[in-house]
Image 1 (cartoon, rainbow over the protein chains, first blue to last red):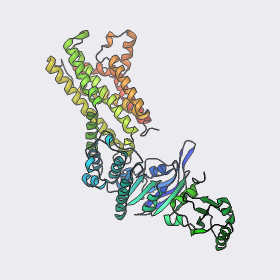
Image 2 (image 1 turned 135 degrees about the vertical axis):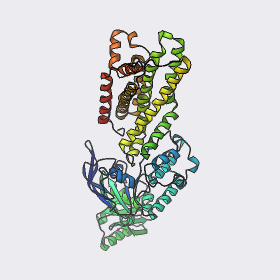
Image 3 (image 1 turned 90 degrees about the vertical axis):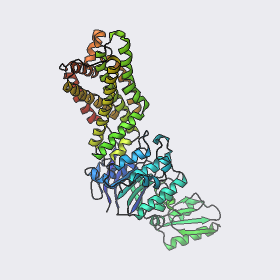
Image 4 (image 1 turned 30 degrees about the vertical axis):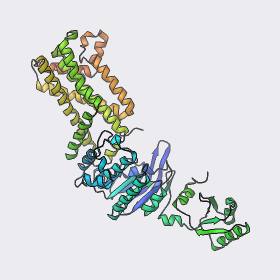
Length: 300
Length: 236
């Protein structure tokens, strides 16, 4: 395995930012950490990058300890911080040249500038670049050393939709080359499109893990769309499950498991309520519903 | 080695690109030398001014410029990003030290050339060994202070502290206002600050005498040790 976390915990004073997380990322896999702000995504990634020391548990990247073997690990990984990291007074070419000198077989700077579409801005002072342009340069810097593992912390935050899509296609190209990728994001679309597996972090704990498909089609959840509104709580009570009204007007009935009899009970209740069932489908509509259901963000 | 060399080049280039750094490190010392040397105001001689302004040059590059640059690199997470690259911490520190030393050589060359061209100045009995030793000790003392301030305070506070102390050293550092012209109690304080012993040491080197080391060496040991202990790579 390329990344292995075993019971990793990180505290800041009395606050436990990361609480006994264990996860494995296989070679050439793309793993996305999802979670609301403050869930512990960045702290988790930074422990993998050797930037923070865990208080308990062990972190292995490429079989090595990112703190004790930092030189070796850092020469084989690529890192994109969530923000910053660039000299405001330097030019993209100068920073790329500097990072090239850190690696034995660097990717040529002009190739990287072309990849992230910054050729026209190659000689512009960093402080004059837009937020999205800086993000793209950070991505280019992460790729200088032909990394085997890439850590991308919110790689497309602050990008316009066009830049976001072209960044996704760069990431897909790297996936094709067999690079292992760990990314954090709060764009569900990004996770669904790029990640082979997703881990959902909430208050420092890994509360769910699986392929986007598995998470969406967890046994027990049913999406119901009706012709007229019904009482969500009553609908759930029929099968003893929690039910939420989704943004598109459909209902997500979220139980641990639903028997065929329970499905019949749901349909019967809907018939008696006098509404037409437009859709009755096993599974959630998308990752976002799964995420909101698990983290309780949609309850308020 | 290659990483160190490229890092040194970029550090130096970024410093020379900052207008206020060029003003502080090159224009001010040379300007003070030209002005006081040609007017002879307050009876300051070129022999007194050159070593004093060399001390001011060391303070401006090893302390003010280094502290401000490092403080903002820390604020903008450049230090953090370098920490996730294969560049070692020792290579980064070596590069910063090399960039400061190169800048100092440029400053000294500008001062000596100005003194030579405008005032036909020649040092009385220069001791090269003493000069190099005093410059290195002074650089270490001030660079340590720079890293201490930059590694503990936020960038904005570092900027204020560095410039504030620059003014203090300018006035009470025996740099171009002779300590002997200050009231007794202040003159005593001058000897305790790192600037006074540095200027005195440089003057001794230019007169072929033995510098009075003790305080300068003490500062050169204490500030880097404190910086190594208290420096954090990221603002919290």
